[in-house]
Image 1 (cartoon, rainbow, N blue to C red):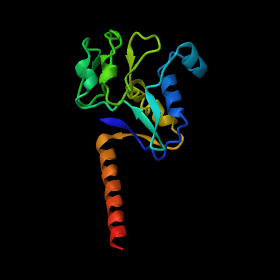
Image 2 (cartoon, helix red, strand yellow; image 1 turned 90 degrees about the horizontal axis):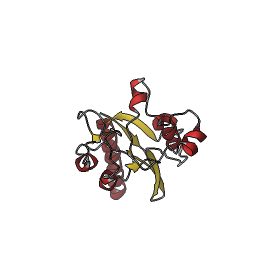
Image 3 (cartoon, rainbow, N blue to C red; image 1 turned 180 degrees about the vertical axis):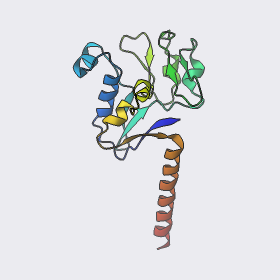
Image 4 (cartoon, rainbow, N blue to C red; image 1 turned 135 degrees about the horizontal axis):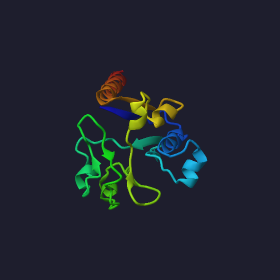
Length: 171
């Protein structure tokens, strides 16, 4: 399954991803109308941590706590290769999933009736497009890639850091 992978070292905290996400999920192409009249919320959030801007969105956990606690079955993963989705017509607004999410990225909608979360822009993907947040990032801090590719890159980074530390310690 593909996932959105964030590189906090590249993020400028410009929030272009948040705006693009909110607009992609709105019933209009007008940003002002989407945000202020419809009250559309993004499904990705920029948070500060340790001097970095960290993009956070649903990680589509393998054993998703939000799915486990949902009493109405509104949150589900139809298939292991698919993202965790919200069927808003089944959502009863209990907010158990909001409390269960370890990343704090399941939120209540503007009208406070249902929850919203990243859906990996399924509609855009069906059209052959990347998620809106990834497409909008001006510095490439967000990538849409297979989960194992990100893990390989992280291992290579860790190995390079360990090798540099070993060289520094030896000399």
